[in-house]
Length: 170
Image (cartoon, rainbow, N blue to C red):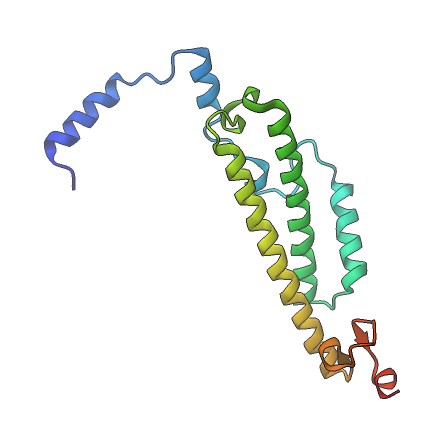
């Protein structure tokens, strides 16, 4: 806990603080509350096209053909991770192309922006992988209940991921 003397000193210092004075300092501080698109609350941010996201969603929907419920939610989550990973690649290209000339926290003059971006990208890739594993587990469990043989239970030479009982008997 702070002593009374420390609290009084902090208050006195705070009264003298006027914020940034230079145009450079003002430009930097103006970006303090800005969230990069990787952590944005909205899925689609300025400059992005909703149709592109819908195309990713349709492709994943067609590929995985989820049933309503958790499978559908996981496919939707996969689409959002794919969208954010795509955004990360665009941000990375902008960082590398424009370098320290980018405004505020996007500038990588201190080296933090690029490492932060790569950390976000890896976190999204890991989350996407875990989501895909959850989806495949749920689908395999559902298909097993429906009488299908799952890939791990069929002979190795059969190329498809999923084999009906009639094909597996041959």
